[in-house]
Length: 100
Image 1: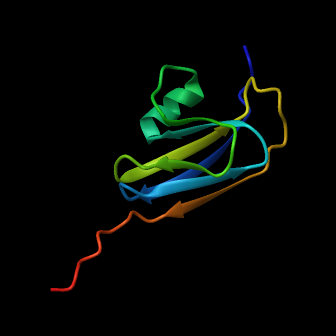
Image 2 (image 1 turned 90 degrees about the vertical axis):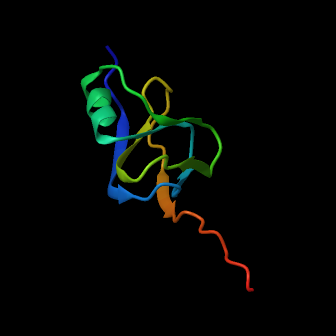
């Protein structure tokens, strides 16, 4: 069994439509998960996530619903070490009202 090699980021609340912008110095698997799926990921059980393999930065992941979220930056099985990363959150785009 492969030992997990990931870095975790956690937000108590992200608004639906927010975008996580992830910069990386190398390839990684990005998994955005709600608390239940993150717990399953940690336990090695079946889980769902948003994201995927990131080979180029910046990689953008849209938050599908408001609530708490976890981001796992996973290097397991990629044969890389020490990938530097940064994560920022862009607020959801609000429609601009046109003057009347």
